[in-house]
Length: 171
Image (cartoon, rainbow, N blue to C red; front, side):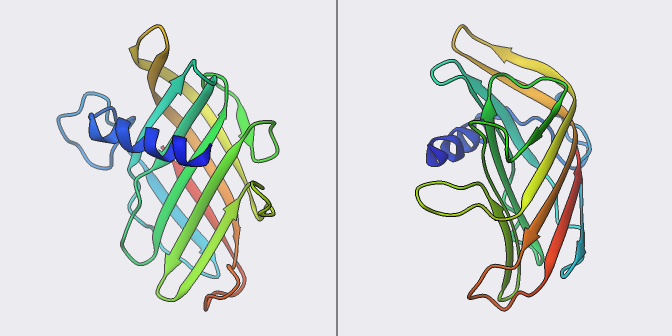
């Protein structure tokens, strides 16, 4: 299931359905986005949400940030049940699938929900303060979201990472 949402996010980005982007381009759907890292790794990686996509096939919403290849780099993918609304989502919500990671050199910190025998690690709180429909069809919609994301990312075993990183994003 997780792969489906990553592909859906990539498809939204490819067709220009971004929910927001860093900087002021011609995209009428643009808004500012920032990420701040504290703890074992610090910095402000680029923040470009790929878009938010809901489909009626499985009644799931996919949300994420474009992978940032800078150092440190950030990747965020979260999917949850239902259409997005102004509320708070957490990794413990039924049906939620998430993977959030920070990479810096040979170090990596990550949170993920449990799936296919992989245990959960870390956690997140996604608070949506507004969800505006950009495109709508009978079986799918894209949204522009505004809100905040806070995630706790423990060090990934087998990497040079130690400690925990806190990611805070505003979009």
